[in-house]
Image (cartoon, rainbow, N blue to C red; front, side, top):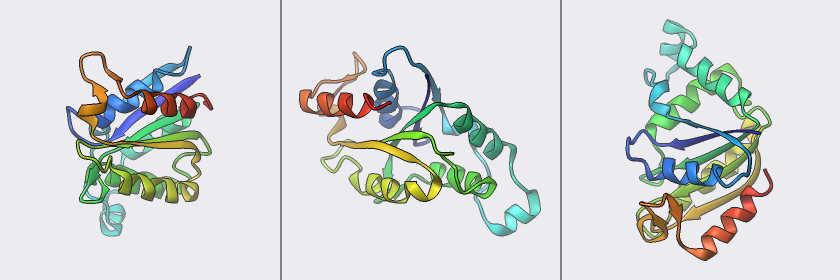
Length: 173
């Protein structure tokens, strides 16, 4: 099984990338590819820009990466209660190639933040809209207070209840 893991964040030190990588690694025997959305940077989407430049190669490559995966693990950063702009832009461009961005793939959606909210607002938006973009959402989990619940040195969750919940979600892949 090939799992595509990514953070919906452009931060080079993304806690969401750490969470997505850790979660994907829980699937025994899986080949995990960790994607960096910074590799898919494009101009801000607009219909005018699309008429001017067409569909950027970065969006085509992103769509292809999703298509090549057997499953997707994505962890969302929350910026002011919504998606990080960098991810939203990649997603918007990709949806112009095909509205079925997730291509019917099984998807686990996660989110985390340093605070107690755990990016739950953006996670709810993502899971709520996912079926419209052909995501087969197998489960979702918000991890609050990332630095209290994740061991940075070991690269793993340390909260037993969150570990158990995440393992249960990941077991469906």
